[in-house]
Image: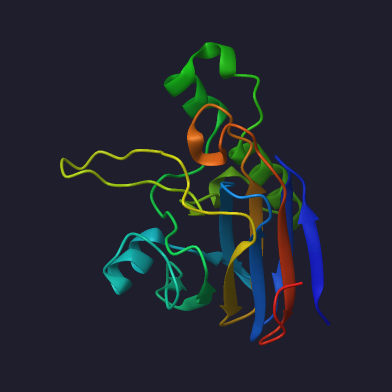
Length: 204
């Protein structure tokens, strides 16, 4: 059975994805960053690891063929289709603290991805100690020659999608990024679609 859920702008979402099933994230309106964490469903101490993933593939960006590795260097999910072309692994999740530092104290009350992760993760017994560096699907974070990072206009467009196959039973947490202070969401967060189903079923 295939289940599709439209996640409103700024909202959180989560699901268990069983081994062999696929998860498709569709950018419905374009230029919307989707913050993403993934855990082994049977042992959440085993979770997505940026260092393991980047080291194994020799690239800080994700696309078709990228394998999301855990902190135990085991495969959690594999990107099987990507119609966008590149996704960020180093920009991290926005928080009240980082917003204040980057954009001023007046942003303190704004909702942020860390808030979404904490609220959604609590449903599964996760807390702040379980939050690790995340993936930002569709977010455009180029690395300059001097090593500095930028957050610039996205390269996504309405209807583009990325599909991942679960290599083991996993728990996925998503924050449909609420950031309005930089271009990662075109300054106007929008809805995205999450579709979970058997491999080869296609996106709804």
